[in-house]
Length: 88
Image (tube, rainbow, N blue to C red):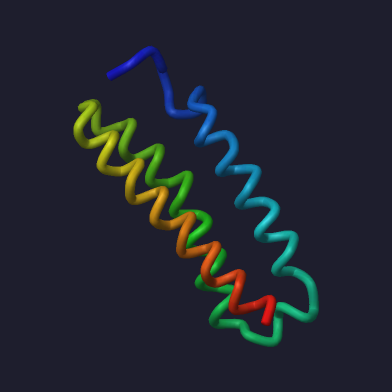
């Protein structure tokens, strides 16, 4: 399963946590709070990034870890797409 002893050691997971914190900071802005449902969905998708990295790691197989990394990547794309909607 690689050289990590825990998912907390994975650089992508660490960056995902920072990204998630930044998403929460950005969406606290009054301009973003107008669309509560969209903000909520963006926050949930950003949480999914680090959650899927952790879940994949805990599955203890390389195949499942890679699968969950793809899911995490897809969640990052979801957040990116939703942020474009908020910036219009």
